[in-house]
Length: 452
Image (cartoon, rainbow, N blue to C red; front, side, top):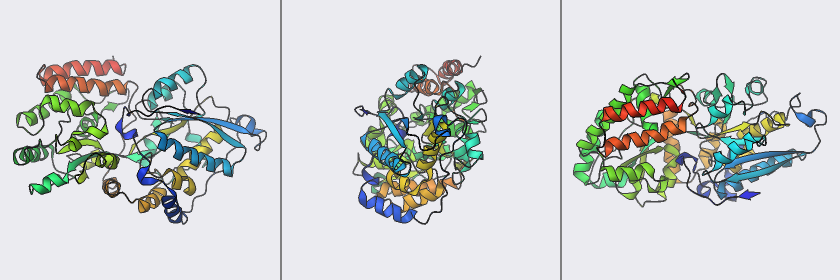
C-alpha cells in the first residue's frame, strides 16, 4: 500500500482529521445511535457489466480504490473497507492513498494509461472533466434501480453530482460556506457578532466598526475568494457557470472588486500584504486565527481545524446576503471507473460506505457531514468537539434555507479560481483598477473553460 507523507491540501475543505471523531468510545456511541436506522442495502448486483462476478458471485474479486487524505483518513477508510470484506469475503481491496498535493496528477496518469482505479475519490474541480472524458461510470441506472440508495440524501446534494444528465459521482459528505468570526475578541470590546442574513453593505459597516473599536481589521478581504464571489453572484440572480459558459459578466467582476476596494478604503479589511497572507495560506493560518482579522471566509466544517490554532472562542454564520444563495455542496465524491471489470460490485461498495450504519460508525465526519440524513443525525449526536457541534448546528439550520444546487463546475474551474486570486490582488495592491482587472480576468476565465 502506498502511504505518501501528508502535506497541506490545495482545497482546505478536503482537510479533515480523525482526532474528534475516532476511537472505540465514539464507535460504540455511534453504533448505538445508528442501530435504530432501518436501511435496506442492496446486495452487489450481477449484471452484464459485472465482469466475472456475473458468472460466479462468489469468485474472488479485488477492487482498486484511490483517495486523498492524511493518515487518519486512511485508517478510517481501510477499517470501513475491511467491514465490507467481512460481509463479502470474496471481495478484497487494493488500497492506494496520498496527500492532496499531486493526487490529481497521479489520477490523470492512471486514467490516461488505462489503469484507472475501480473506485476513486474526486471533487467538484474535476468531476466535469472526468465525466466529459467518459472516465466516470453513469450511476443513474443504479440509482433508479435501487442498487445505489440516495433516497436519504438531500436532493440538491444528489444533483450536485450530475454532469450533462449523467450521475458521475456520489456525494460523500456535505459542506457549505461559513463566515468564521472571533467571538472572544468581539465580546472583549462588547461588539455584536455578525449574523446570518445581514446585507453585504451592513457587514462591511460592521467590519469597519470592529476595525476602529478593536484595532483589529474587521474582516479578511474575500475579493479573491471564489466561494464568496459565487454566493454573491447567486444573490444577483447570476451564477459562476451557466451551461457551457461563464454565468457572469465582466461588469459583475468589476462590481465585486469595487465593493471590496470600498471596504479597504474604509479600513474594514487588512492591508494588501496581510490580505495576501490569507489568500495563499492553508486553513491553519487563516487571519481569524492569526489575529490579523476578526473574520475569515472558509467552509463551515473547518471550525475544529481553525480552533486548533487559537485559544479564542470562534463562531460561524452564513456568508452575508440571502442565505438561500448557499447550497449543499459535496465536499467530495466517490466515482466508479467506466472501464472497471467489476462495476456492479464497485457501486455496491460505494452504496455500503454511504449507507451502512457500521461503516458510518467508522468513518464519522472525516469527509464532511454524511450525505445520508439518517446517518448524519446519528453521527451528530455522538460529536463531542464543541466547535464541530457549532458547525453542525449552523449547517443544519442553513440546510432549511439552502437554495437549489448550481451545476457542477466546468472543466477549467481550478484555473478560474486561481486566476481570480491573481486578478483580485492586482486591485488590492493598486496595480490595476477594478475595471482593468475585471476585463483581464474575464478573458482568462473564458479561455480556461474553452468559451469562445
